[in-house]
Length: 92
Image 1 (cartoon, rainbow, N blue to C red):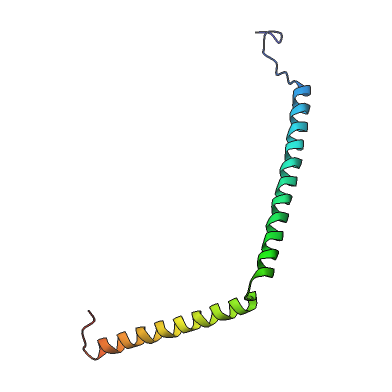
Image 2: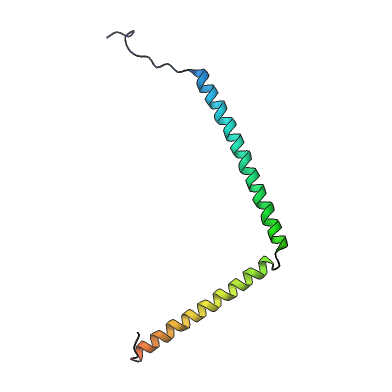
């Protein structure tokens, strides 16, 4: 087998350049679309918060109060359950 018989790797650089240009253009369009979606979501969230009757701080405070109450109630129920078992009461 001689060198002239071996297959050579031929790359069409025009096609590679065209593919790179198209990929770059697609990336720019996708980036612009993502930016527009982000902008629309931000505007919608701001408008929703502006129209909300309860401030986000008040909602967070209320949820924290609810979580504390649930934690206290759960701990009390667990403690009462353990005490009932220690006193020989049925756990069923």
